[in-house]
Image 1 (tube, one colour):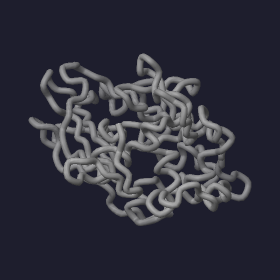
Image 2: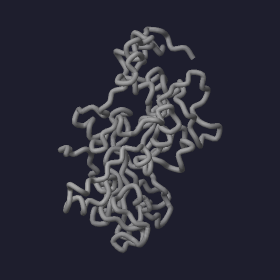
Image 3: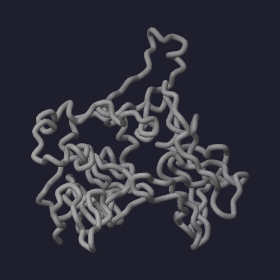
Image 4: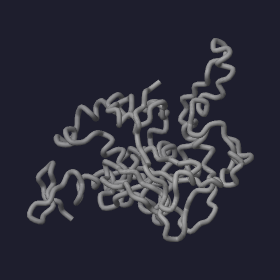
Length: 308
């Protein structure tokens, strides 16, 4: 068991509400927070209301602000229980509140959501071991949006909860999520404790690529994931000018001949990383690889002038 520090904090409810008006807080862990009223409905407010709180993002230098969430829509139910609770059933209403769709044994994703009911294991641990399923499909039951055949997008970024679709679209589909991730230690919790966010470094498999880099500069200024897993995905925040959302993609394969990252109507992402997202989050005005000098955009790493 990992002793987790306090990760994030939401200090206030939406304007016009007190904590006595709030039955549950949705999220508030690493990206954003939404709020459920005492009838079980997600608070949306009137047409001009801002009822979603975006937490501050160190990488983007954005957040710590309130934005609208389905503003003007009344009685928006909370139907996210299948993935955000443990022991979920679609029947009934939790706490007898009309806005809470379904019931659950525990809020949040606890041990039994992945390992199965533990009662029999507790009484007879030798002959009733806890379920251990390493298959990516288990994680994909929740880290998916509308089936795994396409990677859904909106507003110039991949939508959140798309990791399973991304992995399936990439040549890494043969891997399981737990090959890299410790399911008992989230990425944000690991980062806050200055721990590795994955327990399997890229070099474990990609030894030759790591050893024989074509660039003399990149190994000293960037990690593999900076180019192969850029932040193409948006949960709460995005900065379109530097091609960065707030979640890394799991597409991984860079296709240098791609002219677009998304379909013509913007509803799906291509099954690869385009150069816009692989490169321009650093190599563009405001990116980490560039500075302004006498009005010209200069590349920090190479010294070359940035050409249009």
